[in-house]
Image (tube, rainbow, N blue to C red):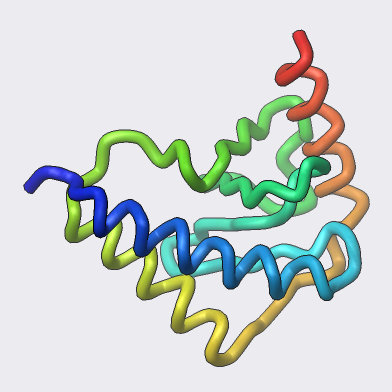
Length: 116
């Protein structure tokens, strides 16, 4: 299946709701969706995600967060599933606050790569 503009727009809408929620939370708050997909706000207030990392343990320079809009080549069904997972998480949020220092380190690494 190919990605449609509508499905990409749906993901961006759900991500904006998540961004709004995270902006009301302490810096470094993480939302973990199914499949251990972790999302948080980078310094520029963009939603970034990382998968297959151990929160608080993977070294910040070994984490490669990606803006939610740059999810790569996935099909419409996967976009819908990700959008639905964000929507479901927002219905009953379970934010993680205990990794704020780790998120700050990851964000610093992310910003340094973004500038360099």
